[in-house]
Image 1 (spheres, rainbow, N blue to C red):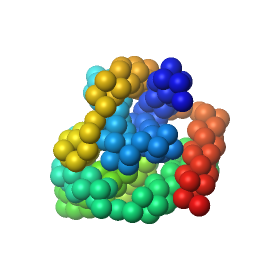
Image 2 (image 1 turned 45 degrees about the vertical axis):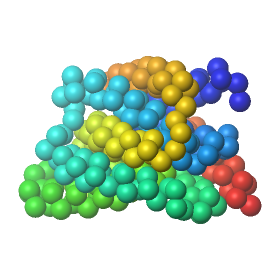
Image 3 (image 1 turned 45 degrees about the horizontal axis):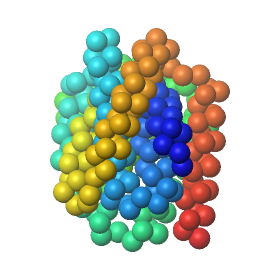
Image 4 (image 1 turned 60 degrees about the vertical axis):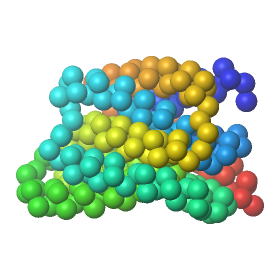
Length: 249
């Protein structure tokens, strides 16, 4: 794939996904795997760019006071601590099993993009115990999946914040992005100790990821992305799933 096209995809993925509380890893990880990067290299590059996009978006969300630190902190701590454990599993897992798990996660994300309706949860005081136990439990799973697959975990964080912890939609998306920063970089640090990193490429790509995150978060701060864009993106994810399955078969 030409470098210019790859950088354009990285920009667009960061732009679109930061609008819904994700960081770009849902595109980066399968893309790098399909380009036949070694798995640990693909995951580490995905986590780094995912973290950059999320950090970029978080700047705007903090300025707008959209991040719920109190609710997100237990999840942030647990996911940050567990992401390196997921990273260690990447080197031990069979490549076909890795691709199958990645394809399943992306398939579930695609179904959510295609068929989920716009949800608004009412802000509720759910109590400290539920917040800590619920957030910590979610964080463990998110951290393991983020470190293993290189996706950051936002695809799971947003619906769980809305349904389990009763966080309003926009706040859930902004809080998810903030958490993804830490889980992504935590997993990335673990991965670079396990495999070589193409610093020249990822630092160049980081510029496009950061820019996409800035633009996407500014749009989301005013209005969540429309259903049409969400459906188009869901179809793109299904194409990635088909390609991943084809590679395994």
